[in-house]
Image (tube, rainbow, N blue to C red; front, top):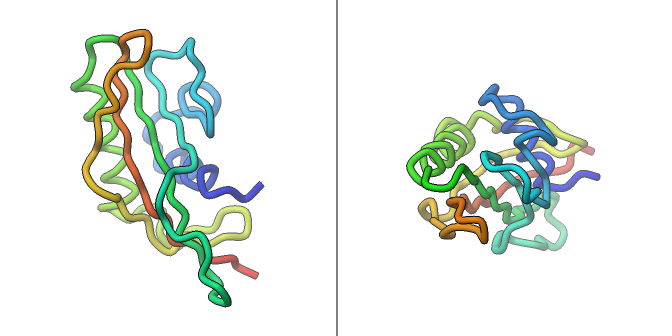
Length: 135
């Protein structure tokens, strides 16, 4: 399915940041048994409907988690992902599943979501993804 969160996960994979899908990069759900991992899921915000215009700007959220007590690494990993996708524009003008990514914008600063129930730090990146169907 051509979901924006799958497109962002693929963009992360394409940037050779060392992540492997279903090993330490996940879409929609983050498994509890992984310490250091990233999850891309549908976020809040973004524009849902542009009427007769042929583009969408959905919100996507990236959650970065690391081992307990490793908050600095969690923040550094999140910043690297945000920089590559938003500052460098690495995924701009790429096509995934019939959608061309026009731009990816970070919505605010990185946010600490505090520790999860196992004490592992969580940092979130909120994005707006501008994409258009290719057909």
